Length: 455
Image (cartoon, rainbow, N blue to C red; front, top):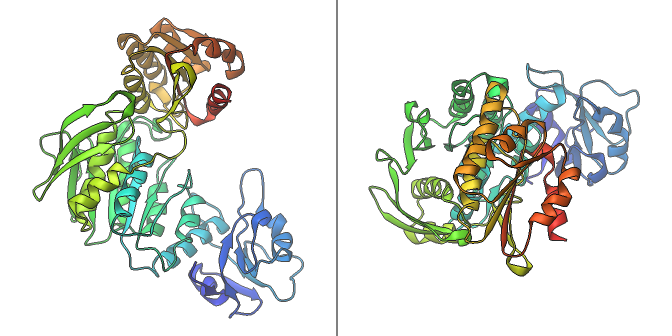
């Protein structure tokens, strides 16, 4: 991280320096007193269950140079600086807002291309694909790690920028309206990417159109000379108009980056051709699933826009590696194949995972759980997934969770209330020469199933 002073921090967050040396140097930022390092600025986050102010003294005694605070502590330690913040908004409390302000100020210190990614499905895969591609030209490319894509994770990632970075790919998620705009004010993207608009978050936003409007908040902080890259096969995204340049990537005829010649190679990957006005790209994607061509096409569009060569883009796609439990193919003994896709789930991503499972030449088992945040479409969406599994000829469907009852009913599968109840049946179903998919919303903790089947 580029160092800055206590005075810089106070100005960035519109705060008041209560005590301490205004020229004290900050060399890091932390929100966790257990991992604080010497020279850090400690930011006490206030949540539903915990108030970081309770750990101010511990963080400072552990070596933090100073802290933010929303209220004046009873005791001020010598040699430490304290910055009091007062501003809050309709979404977040004072220290969280200040954290975002600090990240926005810090990001503005860098003159590098920054890509912001959002979308209902595939945003993490697209983020990773983009980072793999851009790293071929911009050798040090910062990308969002794990699920650090919210009001705490996004500033954390931006504050990791340093002078070695030549580009950044920042993923931003949301639970409701206003959040993408809030995060975009920190990111200030040169390229804004929306992968698609799906049913996740309908419970909060009322309709797919409401989700669409929330995703389009990404454009409010897009640079005036920036570029929007959109999933070209999404009907709602096809209605977007902007003063900035828009590029669409996908299989539809109107796309600026058109995908053709898609060939799936079972669980080994997928290949395709992407054509623009300027070039033709022959892509080999090293992970399975036809849906991966959408992420690859977006990466081609961003890569070409940022000056990468055909060879650099093709090489970046070829070296793509997925993050975490997202379409992770695990080959086990006796011809068993585990499709670990349990990080999260919505109808679009679950449908794609089922189609991938059906590519197998061996026996197939789908272990499917609740899809959350679907509101009024939840019951129909779960039944639709069950019907899809049945139409694809999936050999056995094991549904887990109250909402997943509809999956079992529509597929003719079996249902369990919890993972613990289902595990014995899942183990028995994972016979030699069987492919087994695990897929559910993160709250179902299906990673327990993956752990049980791989240890």
